[in-house]
Image (cartoon, rainbow, N blue to C red; front, side, top):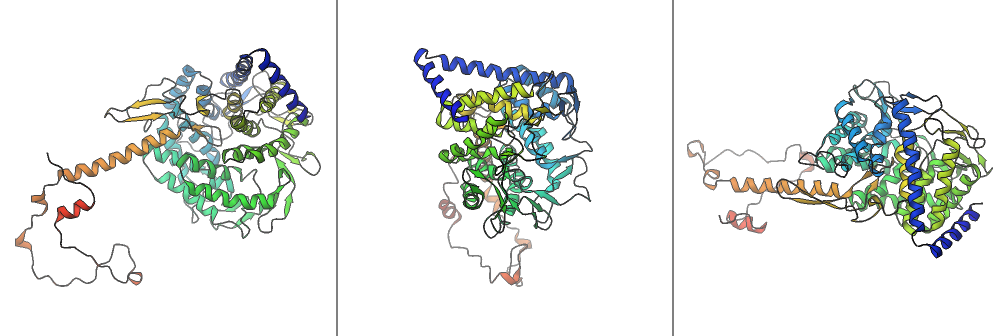
Amino acid sequence: MVKFYFLLGIMLVLVSNCFGGNSNEDELSGLRNQVKDMFYHAYNGYLERGYPYDELRPLTCDGVNTWGSFSLTLVDALDTLAVLGNYSEFRRVANELTNNIDFNINVNVSVFETNIRVVGGLLSAHLMADKAGMELTPGWPCSGPLLDLAVDVADRLLPAFNTPTYMPYGTVNLRYGVDANETPVTCTAGVGTFIVEFATLSRLTGDTKYEDIAMKAIHALNQSRSNIGLLGNHINVLTGKWMALDSGIGAGVDSFFEYLVKGSILLDMPGLMEMFKEFLGPIEKYLKQGDWYMWANMNTGSITLPIHQSLEAFWPGLQTLYGDTENAYKTILSYYDVWDKYGGTPEFYSITQSEPFNGREGYPLRPELIESTMYLYKSNKDPRLLEFGKQLLRSIEEVAKTNCGYATVKDVRDHRLDNRMESFFLAETIKYLYLLFDPENPLLTTMKGATLRVFGDGRECILGAGGYIFNTEAHPIDVSALHCCDIMRRDMENSDIWNTFKSFDAKTLFTVNRSEWDPNPEPSGQRTWAGSDDRNVSRLVMNCDAESFHVKFMKHGQVFTEA
C-alpha cells in the first residue's frame, strides 16, 4: 500500500510540474497552513483550558501537571511560535516566563526530560530572541534573561551528576537535590543525552562545567561497553553495573547515539563521531535483521526482543545526518508500512507477528517518523516523501483531533483515544511537519537567515548562518551563536593577558629589597609541584637559559610594542 501511495505521489508531482510551475509551492504553502491550524487548535486549547498546568488533557479539556509543575507546554512550544512566524506571541510568552516562572520549587523531576524540554527549549528561544524582535541585552547571544533561566534550571540538575561514575541519577528535586533514597538505576539515554544542551550553555556563558560534566558521562558510558561493543539499557550510576542487558536503538538508549552525532557536528568534535562509529559496527552486526533493528543481549548479541519501537523511527534521520541515505531509505520504508496499516506507529510492534505488541499498542503522537522524513526529504527531495508527509498529517487530523486539542491514540487498531497531549506534540511533531513542507526554511538552509551582530566594542559576529542542530526535543540550536560567544570570550581573555603585560613596570617588577635578601640561603630541598606525588616524580629541574628576558619573549611572538 505504501508503494502505491509513493507511485501515485510521483504521478501527481509530474502532472503538476507539467501544468504549472508554481503549483508545488502553492501546495506546500497550503500544507504549511494546515499545520499552523493544527498547532493553534492545540496551543489555544492549552492556553484556554490547560494553562498554567504542564499539559492539556484533550478529552476532558482541563490541565494536569506531569513533568514538573512549571507550565511545561508553554516552555516546550515557545520556539515553535517563532518557527511559525508568530513573533508577537513569542514575545508575550517569553516575557511571561522571564517575569513569573520560578524553578525554586519542591518538586521531583526527570533529569533527562527537564534537560531536553526545559533547558533545551529555553536555550532555543533565547537564540531566537533577535528574530522575534525582543529587546536584547548588550551581550546577546552570550547573555540574556532566557539564557539565565536555562542556567538556573541546569544548575538545579547538576546535583544528580554527583556520583562515583559521573553518570547522573534519573531524578532530582529542583530545590533540595537528590533524595537519599533515590534509586541509582538510570537508563542509558538518561546518562548520555546532555552534551547538546550543556555544551551550548558552556559555549554561550563561558562556564565550562556543563560541557565537562556531559562529556564525563559520555565517556563513562563508552567505557561500559560489553566485549562485543554493545550497551545495555539501564545501569547503576553508583557502581557502573548494568541492570538491564537488552541492547537496542530504541527506548532508553536512542538519544545517546543521536547526541554523539549531533554533538560532533555542533561542537566540531570528530572524537564523538568516531565514538558513534565504534558503536555503529556492533549495531549493524548484531541488531540489524533485514531492514529492521531488533533488541539483543549486550554480551552475546543474540536476539532477545524481535520488536520495533516507535522511538526507533529517529534512526533513518540519524543515518541521513551521517551520510547513509541509502540505508536510511530502506529502513524508513519498513516503518511507513506500519503507519500505513494502522494510521500511526504503535509503541511496540512485533516484527515476527506483524502486529502491535499487547499492552504497547498506543501512539502518543510521537514525532520520530516525521523527523526522519524531514531529514531524508531535505537530503534527496524525493516527492514520495512529501506524499507520505501528507498522509501523516491527514492521519493525525482525522484520528486524534478533539474539541480542544489532539489526543494520544490509546490503541492504533481501533483508534480509541487517551486523555493526554504530550508537550512534544507542539514542540516536535508539529514543528517537523511544518519544516517538511518548508524545505527552504532558514533553519534548514545555509546563510538564508544570516544576520550581522555588532557589539558595543565594535566586534562583529555572523549569526543564523545555517547548520542548526535540533536537540532530541526538536529545539534548534544556532551553531554560529556558540562559535561567536566562544571566540569572543577567547579573544577577550587574550586581550586581558595582553593588557596585563602592558601594565607591567619593569623597574618595579625587578626591584629587590636587599635589606631582606640573604645571599647565602640554606638549601631548601628538592622542589615538587603542589599536589604531586614524590614517588612518581623522579626529578624536577628548572632550567634557566642565559638569555635576556626580551630575547625569551621574542620566542613567543612580539610582546612589547613601541608607544
